Image: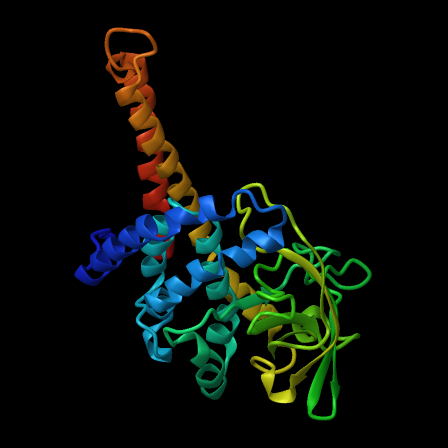
Length: 326
């Protein structure tokens, strides 16, 4: 079956508006955060920029139509991701980390859960954050392994009409929120049975913040996303309603896999965006710099060949990523 990569008129409008927004707003993120000393300070400084993203309706535009958003599929996300990431890697990642944080609800939530939990993210106000609390200090790739090699050691125990959750997580984008007290919504991957096999023991429980018991240990210094928050934190007796478990006890393995399957292709799009930004910078340099010669260096054949090879790689990577999204 042939695949047509022509954008629909709606997607083209989305691309144009995302590009204009990135150049007008996101281009200021770097200058505003560059000289701040800590990841927490840099992340806090991005809040007004993220608020602009929400106000402009980009989060709502990416959420699927059936839950009240305007998104028609992963290609919509790819279009916005490339335009945003080509200008700023930090605030744009905060946006898409929130999308990842909502994926478990989209994948495994009941209609009632979707309606209630997604409501704050469908408005054009505030700075709502969602996080997918998956990775742990004990491992990520081996999260579904049985004891004693299990990477997932966060536990949840039913206590009356609430879950009590204890454990530790890291690399979870935005999880501790703007003030260290937790994101507005955290989908916590945990074990709800100490003895059952992974396909029956792993669950996803939604913690609606701010929540007592979210303890920030440290924010990771990230080379490429210096104003994006990836904390290491503890979950100490955090409470969540009994009905906040997605798909029932033991449904977590399938929900985790579905959530990552739906977003993994965007990593390729992020790479395309950075390649594009680097290419544009290099092309401008080649067109304007003479290196002491009589003509701009782009006039030299070897430079033109190198640029053509780079452009070919970018187009190939975009086609592959878009195909995966489609």
